[in-house]
Image (cartoon, rainbow, N blue to C red; front, side, top):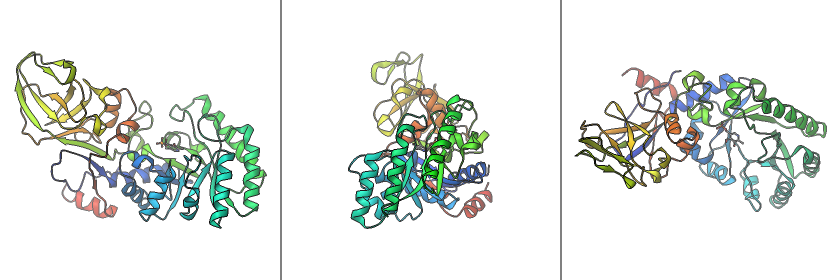
Length: 399
Ligand SMILES: Cc1ncc(COP(=O)(O)O)c(C=O)c1O
């Protein structure tokens, strides 16, 4: 794909997460090409999986996303407060949630059960205008959503609320359990249940604007799941939703986040020297240690102690001993580098650095968790914010 390297570099910081918005825009275009008949909802919950909600939302919209998706209503309201005008859907409600604010902010609000429908219709009455709601079906995930047995009651109540001018059902939707395992029997089963539940709602008179089920892995591997809209999160951030099926490049994607830190101290130590809490690493012989000033308070998983990879001066080094709250150590094997040298924990991989997927493997988790947990103490530095062509041109001419 036509990913550009960053067009500008920032001054050295303790640590920074560079967010390449040209890569994000290219990923959105690649995903739209995978689902050409569907609209694209950019899922920007959890601060855009740690990448920064508002800049990523704007970049996704610039590249052709027409919807934004968040989990909580507060995230959706924050987008509106920032001046974002696109359709915004939010799906994780609890009793007493800000329904009226959601109505007044023109949010599309998910309803999974009768309690939510009752609260949203009461809020619509108070607001004096109808609420846009999307009914969520539990087609087999067993998490949020309305069970098939309870669906007729929810649909009938939603129809009555429509007739009363209190709601407009804009969508019918569901979520997969195992979309990252192509051929898993639950995929076909969930699709069949979804079709039945949509059919029931439409026969009852619901006229949804959008029907949708697909997350990133479904968008990439299950075309029959695309319906009217696909909801992509992780793939938009350039991370493979199913590493065993393909790398980001295999799916035409490029990782958006690069996490780097400035080496804080380099020193010679003798053999037999314990390193970091618990002395789980002891130097083999005389060597040099490099201090990397990020830790689990910054989202570096303590589970990756002894394993997490870091690129320092062209060499992969591993976390030596435990990751602490604010720092960890790498064994530089006798090499010396100046303090202030850039240590790259992860990035796209095209400069030889590890990827978020490498950290996921080191920490026995998924790359979703690696990027999403990068903490607020790490500044996000946005690259290639400007119009696509300019960013590409200015980079390419110096490449
Ligand atoms: C309801 C819903 N839809 C879509 C997504 C996006 O999933 P992915 O990041 O795999 O694209 C999520 C994220 O977990 C979600 O909760």
